[in-house]
Length: 569
Image 1: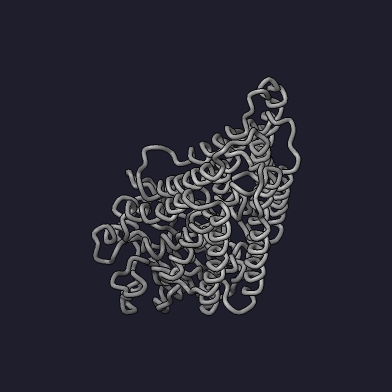
Image 2 (image 1 turned 90 degrees about the vertical axis):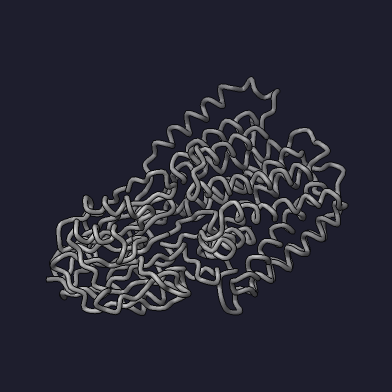
């Protein structure tokens, strides 16, 4: 999981160059590292286990030493391949009673450790301190691998096949995405955190206990249906989902043993890659179907591995369990409490708008803390962020917004654009009211867009702020005129329009906005390493004046931020 959480975002930011590489080429390159482990079929099981384990351990330490760029990409890719080869050897050598306990326990511990360190992996942390747990973990892993001597009772192939889909669903649903709320106070995160911890405990314990077996597949299918509804789970259904997942793994592990456990593991990991690629590619390519059905299909696959035909007559307990889950589905999800904010007795405020590219800088490293520290140095009153990720497994499973807002000491308001976990956000400690988000219609473009509106109070005067990230600027810019409140108002964000574009001119004239950066050198914002176009903007209505404006050259995204000091009145 450590290697996967580095490989996936590295594929996008380093190899994919944030969209410059054709998706077909990116997909083939990514698939290579999940197809190469098929060569393990030619190896003795113990060679695969020890060789793959050794390369994975060395790769994990090498990841701690890399600082972005191609070394990070290839070290993580080789580590993932080695990890699958290791699992192939484990599937053939680890006894069934151990495997059906270890797999759910390992999934739970991986996510629990990720949560315990603030869901920011040690790989992304600087300094000598992260090396201590990294070395200890690698040493413990090697010690455990050396202790595997082989067995005459391997686990059933269906258990190892189910592990691939289980890995994807665990990464998607039993991580930071389970904790998101609309605020940044400990109270907002208390119940989601407790629910996630309970879910991880249930996932681990489900590998130990679990009868009658016929309940497991029903529970898994119902929980997967709930999960697919909006891209994340309700707090009340987290333990139900984990119970269904862990229980299915246990039941699959008690089925009659087959002779192809290693091959089943390899097939399951290829399915893991296909599911991940298809689900997230739907936000860049038109697939012709709703990607929400991918996790549902994976839930059905896991449930199928736990079906034992002699157990089918016990249908009444299964119906009772399904009704219980449906009842929990109606349980209201928690939401953050809007902060009253701190009023300021002045007529100026500082605003930052920044497309953070999920927090990954120019070298491909995760720079969330650096973004927050840089922003804090500007002493902002309002921070507008685009391309905010709140737990997408594809990007490593980090809650960008929570991390940045906590470090800044600001409250936040999140506006989803692509499912519930990716979008835009407003961070501020000013008094806030009239918070809402309006989806912007797209015509065939798969990535969603929205316009987020909030009203802040500056010196007792209301100022409306519209934060957006246009995906189809020619079409969506026209819609902004209908969602921009009366002056004084600010429209800001990544508009994907340059000042000379006709759509940009229409945006200014139809809403009555001015472009203050023209008075401050008209600095470009994209691409960050060699900026030539200004597509990130802060536009002002009558009643607002820019006192100062700058575009700092910082390497924390493929865009540059815009910092404007604004006077009201």
